[in-house]
Structure formats: C-alpha cells, structure tokens
Length: 131
Image 1 (cartoon, rainbow, N blue to C red):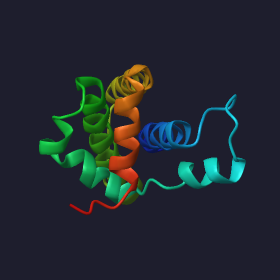
Image 2: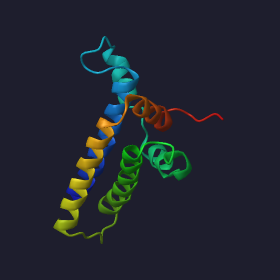
Image 3: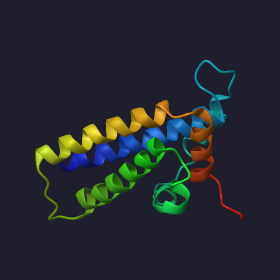
C-alpha cells in the first residue's frame, strides 16, 4: 500500500512535468530540442509546486480543472510523505484505489484544459515570481 500511495503522487508529479515540457517546449511532433524538453521536464520542484498549488488566491484564477489538479497534487504529496517516512503509516486498499482514481481523473482534466491555462500553470510552478 505504501508503494501505491507513493506511486500515485509520482504519477501526478510526472504529469505536471510533462505538461511543463510540452507547453513550454513542444510535444513529440513539434520541432523541439530534446535537451530543452528534458530541462523543462525536470524544472518543477516538489516543494515549490506544493507551495504554488496551496496558494488558493492564485489557484482560484485558474479553471476548476487545474485547481482540482493542484488540490489532488497537494493531498497526494502529503500522503506520500506519510507513506514514505512514517513507520506507523497505514491505509486501506479501498482508500488507495480511490486516490488512484482521483489522480487519474485529475491528470485527464489537466490534459484537457485550455492551452493558455496549461502554459500559465507551467510558468506558475516553475518560474520565480518577481512581482
């Protein structure tokens, strides 16, 4: 169960990474640099992404699908930390299956969100905010 909890979070994290790389550099069919795509893919940081997704004032400006992805991401990261580092962590199989289904739905919603919002999300979770 611990591995499933951790994998659920990492599926969300990698979906975020892929979104960043695809919208900032281009998808597989685009004329893109593999090196630049990899750099964009590796640019999201776990804690920064969590902080940005936790900023409800900013997240309310995004469409509900992206806001839901962010909330799912934060909850999954909290559970992953417990599963990976708390020796007394326990969870039910049914809860893990629900979390997996929630994560899958969140990824689908992210991927179907408008490109301008997916680009804004990529900038929000990867670039330093210099207001």
